[in-house]
Image 1: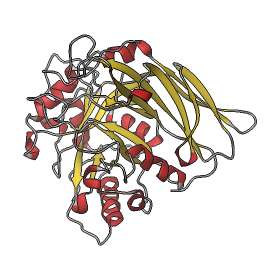
Image 2 (image 1 turned 90 degrees about the vertical axis):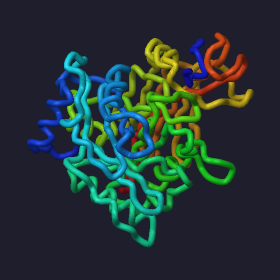
Image 3 (image 1 turned 45 degrees about the vertical axis):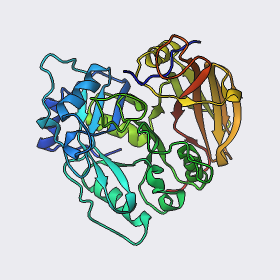
Image 4 (image 1 turned 30 degrees about the horizontal axis):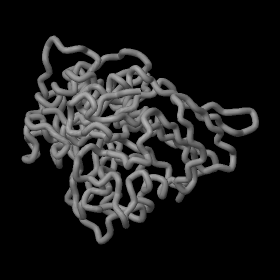
Amino acid sequence: MTPHPTRLVGRLPHRASALLGLAVLSAGCASTGAGWYKGNTHAHTVLCGHADSTPEAVAGWYLDHGFHFLVLSEHNLFIDPADVELPADRRRDFILIPGEEITGSKGIHTTGMNLDGLVDSSFDGEHKHEVIQDHVHGARAAGGIPILNHPNFGWAVTAEDMLPVEHLHHFELYNGHPAVHNEGDATRPSTEELWDQLLSAGMRIWGVSSDDMHNLESWGPEVSNPGRGWVMVRADELSPDAITDAMTRGDFYASSGVILSEVSVTAEADGAKTYRVAVDEDATRRELESDLLVGRQLEAAEAEPGFRIEWIGQGGEVLASHRATSSSHRLEPGMPYLRCRVTCVVEGGSDGEGPGSAGEHYAYFAWTQPAFGATSGH
């Protein structure tokens, strides 16, 4: 059984610890040169007690499915990549990056990425922002970066909880687990609306996509399978530090299926910036034919197949929308920020496969990181 409902129709300081060096070598670190690297920052193993596969099996799945890096982010457990045995004859452009899902009080979960050891999660404060701040301090003290996970899971985190937190620059905009409420509900914002609330208030924060995988033994939209969300990171080389450094700069985009061939921001002589994006149609087609993704089902009025590029600014306002595979937009000096959402709409079930039926339409996305104009906050 496969969960896919569609077919496509249309600067972190350098860390020199011996332990990390062993982990990198064990994971098959490859200095392959500058390029785009596909990775997942959030995955679970049998060690957490509610996932079904070993660290070796989980890492093997991502290795076999074209990913370049993976963080085994177990709840309050540090999995040393040196202890995870990968096949001797594997492709060499794949690494494990050490991490942990810091799982604390008040429903706060934070991935610590590129850590050098376990981060304590025992702190409890009166307010949620205090717990988040403790996770951030802990991840940074362990040499890594914090990513606040699935804020709408259990409706645990609001913009008001995040805004007071210092040095929080990443959160999960998209999470592939079926219970995380990415889309919000009638009274609570989607994670994308939450992002615009934060950006509009002056917070510099990047959006991450992950699959939060738990299940390899069973498959379907109702379980947490791998391959549903990832980041594409533009780094100087494939190494834990280079990947983490690029994500710290915001040199990546988040995806639930759409692949881009260009993401660029160019400074102009008049003080403006020109933001450009372009879709890699062939790579996107390959992703959406992989029988892995679960798209967002659309209402009929939204269901015109093809690509749409939207430019989004202050307050979440859509400044421009184009049915196209490439587009550019100016970030004027007085604009606080500009980001881009690329949507691919496809029809499901027309070939008789997947749980969708003919006539149903599904959307898949790429979200680029904001470019900033006026001076923004923390």
